[in-house]
Length: 206
Image 1 (cartoon, rainbow, N blue to C red):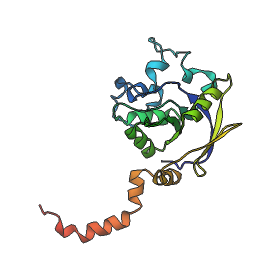
Image 2: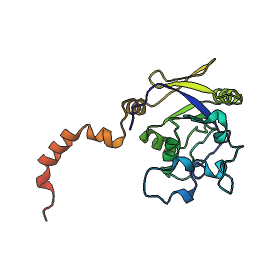
Image 3: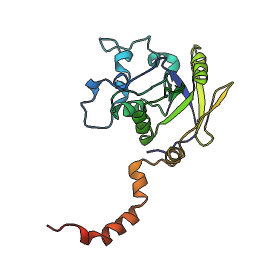
Image 4: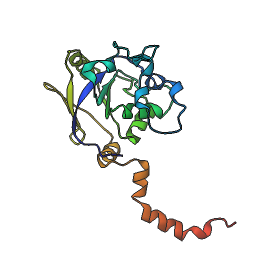
């Protein structure tokens, strides 16, 4: 996957809590055996009318969110089933960061969704509910809301305010280096080959 670099992007703020993976990508879109083509299915039940036309009231269809790469939701984002297709849909729609609030014992993200994001190059950021409320307030303006995301410095900067966030050091390192699980394993290809060569006599013979 691509290395995560500092970027400036447009914000799309979906003001709902408990957005589950079926809302992110409904089950009827899970028939493909490929890992591509899921972007247009993101939020499809909310995004499209029954006749397939765009629902103009849904935030992702509004002019100010076109080309958005920063997705903001409420707490418990990505709950529900563990389908990785939900993360593929988020990524293939163009989102590189997802932000949600951590409120006491209520997490910003479901654990499996958050782990799947890290494995697919998406940065998940938990901010305080107060900070996320501020982002939603800023997003209510008619014009596009832009922010700069700096993973190295662990900051998200808007025109008038900057938020700092925490991130697991291992996740941060892999995102900055553009390493998924396979790429990380291949870094040790030499050691793996040596081990297999030295231990092949222990393998059962036909």
